[in-house]
Structure formats: structure tokens, C-alpha cells
Image (tube, rainbow, N blue to C red; front, side, top):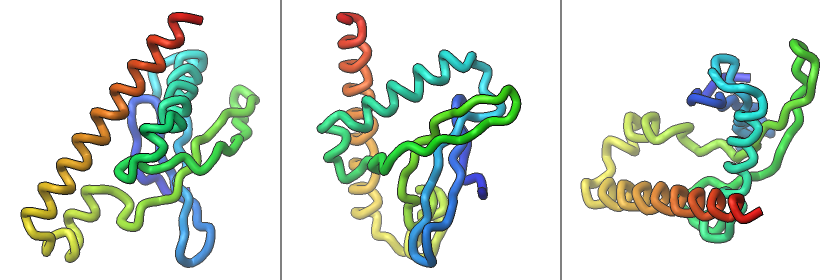
Length: 137
């Protein structure tokens, strides 16, 4: 699978469904400096946030399609991968460098920025809500 990106705890790869659609798989990063327990906790929190109605229903936040299970050979175990539909341009950076992105009027770029800001704010607010709720358990 081709790598689309990588963060502190996970990498994102793509796999083709058909000629028009690709899945993006968010997998455990080989370079993460965290224990499996910490990585699984972060993954579970991300699932809870993505499934929380205000996040799930937001057009500016990509929806979780499902979870796939990967068999990891060393050490031998099974690990969950988050599954998303891959964005048409792959990433915001790729879109903005494309001909369509370059031709986008400033007013539409500002709307895009506003959507991103609102989505990130919503993700953080829901993440805090889920964290606080977990303290009550």
C-alpha cells in the first residue's frame, strides 16, 4: 500500500477499491515512540471522537468507514486499522498545488480555511468531552 502520510502514532496508506474509489487506512506507525497500550488508547479515543454525532455529521471532517484488522508478524498479534474513503486530491497540500487549487479564488480559499478551523475546533471540543466522560467511569 502506498503511504499517504504519517503522524506521531499512525501512518495513512491507500488501497484501491475500483477505478474510481480508494480507501485510506490509518495504521500504527512503525516509528511511534509509544507503547501498544498508549497507541490503542489513542486509537479508541479517535474512534469515539469520529463517531460522536457533532463530528460524524460535519461535512468538513472525513467520516470513518470502518475498522480493518491487520495481522502483524513481529511480535505476532492483530492490530486495528481505521478505514476512510481517500479524498479526491489526497491531501489539502496536493489540492492547493493542483491546477484547480491554484485557480481557486481567494474568497473560496478563505471559506476552506474557515471550514478547517471549525472542524479542528469541533474535534478538540469533542475530544475533551470524551476525555472528561472517561474520568467519570
